[in-house]
Image (cartoon, rainbow, N blue to C red; front, side, top):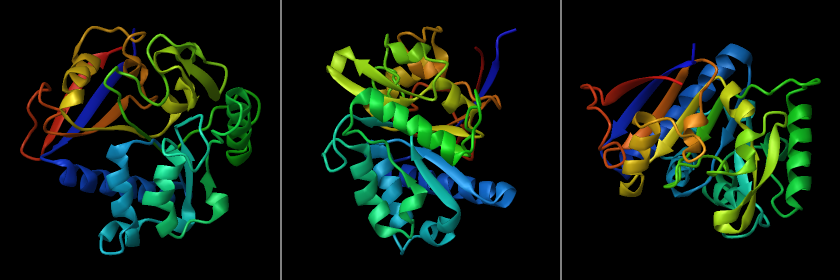
Length: 265
């Protein structure tokens, strides 16, 4: 029988409310991880949508900064562009400017992908850092407490782009992926790592994502074209945090702004 996936989604009216919901989600998941295991290991994505949530986490006027267990947090990246860390396109730079420069994280808690290196070397070094950081042996796969994902208008997530070799990489934890459509290299966590996480969520907003979100979660299965369909957390539950525009083609939510979908993958 194919794996069963329950999709729980939360819909917010606008970008400001979406950022608040995402910031709250980061904090709640970190608190739960620390309470259960003494530490929170989180992998984050880049882009403009999470940037607003990161700014809220860093803002002393918001409740989230005071609640986040910064001293028990390890921050990792889902993927990175192959550019230096001060480049405008760097996921690390965005996170540093929005979050890291303003919160009490020590350098040893921050695990960036070295996009300035040769892509294969960067992937190998990050896999080594994962193995050391999680104290892995042999074929073990790290178990993140939280993996935060975005979704591109082409259905990609992380740097798992349509019709690229990384979609089929099952042996490695991190891989270099050449994206022909962008004529660029990326470094990304692989599907076994993402799907092993205790909690995975997508953060998606805007009219440019309405149709693709519907195709990914309600359309026919076509993961080569829609890599986001390959996100199937081992626990069987996937969370979406959306704005009203992105969620326009999904079934209506309940009075708490929550909806549900079910799939046999």
